[in-house]
Length: 212
Image (tube, rainbow, N blue to C red; front, side):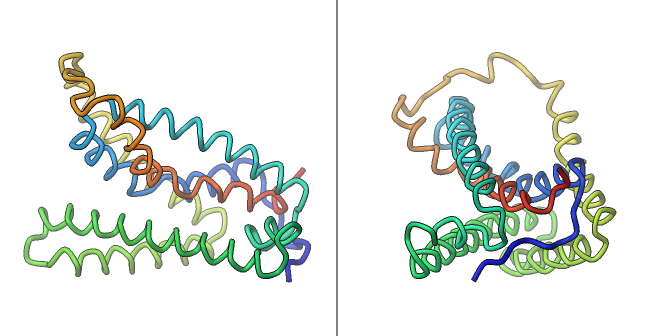
């Protein structure tokens, strides 16, 4: 059964860092490649469409979190109208989705790392990545605010480095042909872009532990 949150409160800046740590992950680096191969430069539009969808979903989850400021996340949100069984089903499906998404992301990470560490198989590299991610999250929890800040900058640095490396190669010629697979591919690709947004729903779960 869900209970009212009595956890130690955190400030807005820490909450933003925790939320970004949950949202910014390997999907940001792996999904663009898949979209570029399957959709072309128009994959940018797929990301925009998914951003709008996640914005509306985030607003809905934020409102629900305000109405039910308790621990339990999706169980708490589904139980009032679907009962205990409905809450269990909602929580189980959410957990299953996260596990599948993490599996796909780790698989992609293993394939990328194999190019740089060919003596280790992609499967082993995926397992090593999983172990390191788990360790970093445990450290982040143990070190509280400091750990979250370390994880945040460790996540942000590759993004900044990628932007700096790619910026000199920006050219409008890279956008042609813009949509070689046709307009319908834009909507089909939204399910791929969704993996880059996994974790955004965690912001709602922070509602009851944020000061004011």
